[in-house]
Every structure is written in C-alpha cells, then in structure tokens.
Image (cartoon, rainbow, N blue to C red):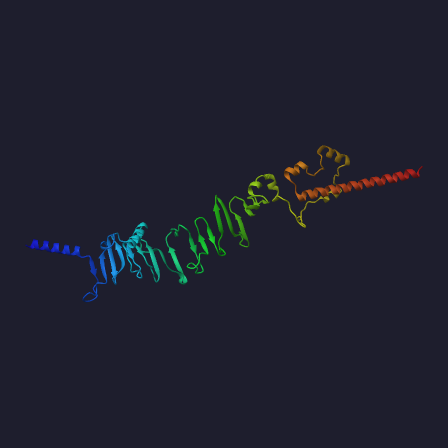
Length: 357
C-alpha cells in the first residue's frame, strides 16, 4: 500500500511538471500575474529553451544551448524567423552567448570577455577624460573587420555624410583631411625595400629616403625626374634602370649626373688648392716647340688634355678641364713671350748688321 501511494504521487508530480508550459509571475490576486510569464520556447519557436514575456509582449529568450536573445522593447512584433535569425548568427560566432535586436547601454563598461582569472580581457566603455574606449588588454590583435571598408569620422559626420576622415578600403587607405604624424616615422616596406619619412639622426631637419641598400626615385607625371642611388650619387633625368648603364668608375669619381645639361645664369666652383699657376714657376719644365709638335703628331691632342675618345667614354671634370685649358693658355703665353724675345733679339742683330755695312 505504501509503495502504491509513492508510485501514484510520483506519477502525478511528473504529469503536472510535463503539463506545465507557462509560469505566471504573481503580482496579486486574480489575473494580475498573467501579462508576465515564462514559457517553453517550443510553444512558438523552432528551438528549445525558455521565452520571457512582460505586458503580453515577447522580451527575450534563452536557447537550449545557453544563448540569450534580448528583444527591442519598442518592437512588439515577434516572429519565429527573427528570433531564429539572431540565434543562428550567435551560433556562427564561436563562443557568443548574448544577442539583441535592440541596443545595449552601459553606464561604465560593456565587457566582451573575461579571462579564467576573472580579469577583463576586452571591453567597450569610457576611458580617461570620459573618452570612449574600445580596449583589448591581452597580447593579441584588436581586429576590426568589414567586407567593404572601415570608415572613421572625427567631426561627428558619421551619420550625415559619406566623406570619412579616414577610410580603410579593400586595397587602399584614404585620408580626406590633412594627415599629421607626430613623434614617429612614416614607413613603407615592400619587397625588402624600406622607405621612411622621419627626422634626421640629430632631430634638426626632416629626412626622407630608404633605410635599406636601395635607391629612391622622385618624379612627376609617372616618370622619374631624379634618382638617388645607394652610393649617394644623384642622377637628374635618370631612373634606376638608365643609371645602371653608367660606368661604375664614373660613379666613384662624380656625385652628380645630369642627362640634358644645366642652364644657369652663373655658377661657381668651390675653392680648391689646385690651379694652373704652377706654369709660371721658375722651375717649370716648359716643353719645347719641337716636343709639342712630336706629341701632337703621335697623339692627335694636346698634352694633359683628354682625347675625344676619353671624353666620349668617361666624360671629364669641369674643374680639371678648366685647369688644363688654363695651363695651355699660360704655356702659350710663355711661348709668345719667348718668341717675342727671339724676335726682338733678331731685330737688334739685324739693325746692328745694317749699321756695320
């Protein structure tokens, strides 16, 4: 008899629990609790879990696998499709546990993750001076992802215009306001070439160039107007490819190469200790006219003057050629003086001869 009674009570309790699908919130006598109730989600939605209702309006649910849905309180319309859509999206994002059709508001922080030690790994909230902050406090990247682009406004125009201050698009970054970089370099790295805009090593001038063993081209209209090689040679009117055709010996001798020449109202040569005045030294060995003639017959150019072939293949130094030409002028002056003395001497001899007749 005792066993039969226990079995009957167990059956009745189980039947009552299975039959109970709505749990009303008691607010007083009569029907006052019916507008607020908790129900099994299988009653209206195609997933297991519990749904919550207040004022006879759907407010949210927790699915059978522990994911919460919070509904927009301004939207009394609820459908299985909408709730299922949010749950499906939650399921597709790893360990996500809460989704909402409305907006989440927090007075301080919205925590997005907690570590096993109980510390906050990442959060959205307010930082110093009341600034909004989105923080990742782990040694990990903070990833912002979009299939079209990430746009940023700094003037409150994000809701009123399509011209962001900074746009990170599929394959480029666009800034629609002046770009200012403070206390750091702007660096571009590609194919092992590093290009940097920064201050120089003593922080007293701007510096732009490469920090690897590569040259840099500067140009307009898609063409190179200036190429600076890794050996500090400057090639005006050249690009890297055309500068490679210049003899390396010339690159070791000269610093600046100009393709089309220089037009200038005036120019100066820096002071140098070498000039041709040594020709007027008393110990200078002035070649005789016969020696000069023999040299010209054998070499077809003046001594210490480069030949046409040398100029065609190696070029020449403007300073050195000026010095060499001055040397020839000074030597020619000595020849003229010497010749004039010989002429004067002949005149005296001729006059003396006439007087003795």
